[in-house]
Image (spheres, rainbow, N blue to C red):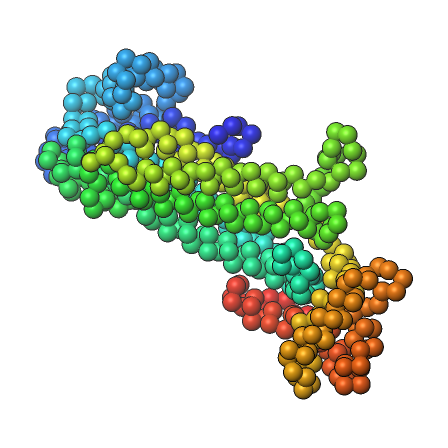
Length: 449
């Protein structure tokens, strides 16, 4: 991932030094586990830990370069690392990696890295949730127009909009927690997963120390359905990011102007047009979401490996595991900041709500006519006729409001009491369920009107 979209904490997970430190920890724990079952001398396991730990703790880019140079000869990354490690550990290095295969190290390391990455992403989602709750509570009773097909539908609450996104990100958090649990598995099972040269207790020991579970059957690799589920969970979170970003982009359009991204002092929207205030953050989030979702199909294709293993999955994960997690980390942090500072314009929302002359109340008027004794089919015809009369002549000299057209209609005026129409065209009726809905989402009703 390019530095522009890389946060240091997430990028560090995928840095070579972190990877080599995890590799050493797996090897040292495996040696300790083997000592526990009597497969290697306990003193040798202690020596591996005592001499190797300071080496990896003090690793520099010079050490990374040296391992790379060894790999240029061996053409094998794990062997290159073990060769570098053996120089510092000494004769007891013969007990390092005993009976193990490279995938035992690589796959267990990847599991650790993915859990580390997921922990950061869960914290990122928590920040998004906090920002959304803030906006939902601040605008619980802020009336705005709901839209379907991008066309005015019926009134709603801007706070309820935010509550809906909050509920989605709460589900996304649960998805990440589940994905973390599924990916957190360890394999120390040998060449084709038969434990021919290992004791299963060694795997259990390593898994427990790393906070992982032992993979039930690992062949030579941990089955890639787990990884596919992890990438899929990230993709669904990214879809939620884009859905919210798209909402902000639409609300910021010049014709709408109901909400917009915070515009910083000194910020410039265009090199040619000084008036521009563009939704650059939400547009960027849309692009980042595409990057994260791009990992899903290759991850699903990785599930099918030849027999006990091949390495067709390797390059995919080396690219997409860092890129997807780094991109989503950046996107979630950007989204949290954007929503926390979102500028909301209730007056503009109110103006837009009434901009079509009241036709947005047609649904409630339809119900009011039906409750007054008019057949529903007739009521629909009457309401639609008056709504279209309002709609088509909106802004013209002969144009009238929806209410005026209803009052002038002989099938309505004098038939339906004025107070019934008043109640039907009161936007506040669309807020009556807010307490119940907020309690469902937040566990509390929130602020009262």
